[in-house]
Amino acid sequence: MIVSVSHNAVLKAELSIEGCSACVSDATTRFWEVLDGSRTYSGAHAIYILPVLARCPKCQGQIDEMTLVRPKSKV
Image (tube, rainbow, N blue to C red; front, side, top):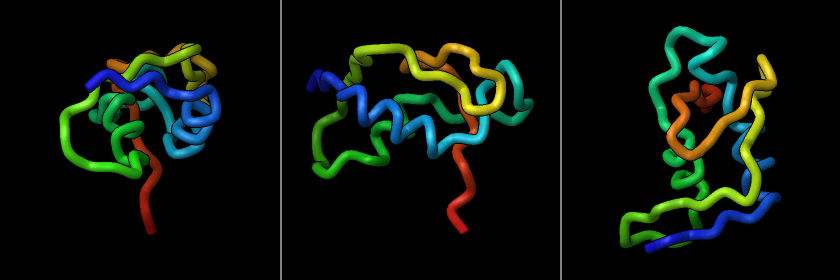
């Protein structure tokens, strides 16, 4: 399944990460996995298409679907 992500969903996903592989050493989660975690439906594996590149909240680097990131802790 191909999912075209909204700009709003990209912004929401940016808020749920601490940093990217360019600025944090333990970034091990792909950005698409962060997007996948916010899906309201389950089932088929999704391929995400971003309308814009996301920005790292720490270093302002560009983030695409495959960029490694560190999600914020869920405490």
